[in-house]
Length: 282
Image 1: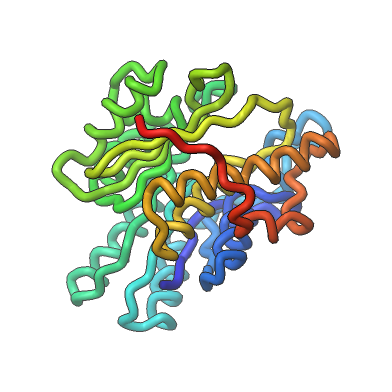
Image 2: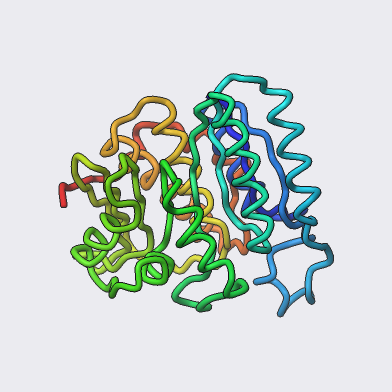
């Protein structure tokens, strides 16, 4: 199955499509990028380098590019990975293009990373995007990839523990056979926990907290996890291998004190089964 990744793009660094596309390709999956915003680098580097040059892609242009990629892949089902959008209207145009495909009988999968904010920075997108992800995108998602902060906003529930996260995840798309990966949760051993939930159960993988300066680990985790599911891994296998692989890249970044993920030299780690994290039922 091919993937169309509809996310942000930076010219320097590994966030958004610059992280997701190599992750899918490392798993042997063709991934085609539709960029919702184009920036020189992540805005988190603005203090050192000034605001990054670039611009949002107009909703009409995003929709036209997505339609063009759909035309190239034809009637073969694909997975659409929806991440940072820039505006709610862009998201609606993307969902409209997917709806056209489904009406014609093409059963594409929808992977939604509801990029809204995080614990460190709070909400960093327009408020309308919260409603879009909550009311329009999440109910259609086959795979949903919120962090702890985003899951709380999407559900209106308190998410302070693994039990909270499991309860909230089960309400995001009730009655559907969807999968939810919740990242950046407090772990039981003082680390960072990641919880994967579907209709059959829930699994947790915890890794130590590390002094990471680089951005993009969440984008990388979501893509590696989705790639493992597309490749046929079970929920538990996908969680363990994704968390372990991304932690290996994070360890390398911390060892270098890097402000960007050292992804190019660590791509082989994304598919190495030896990097699988320990998983426990939850």
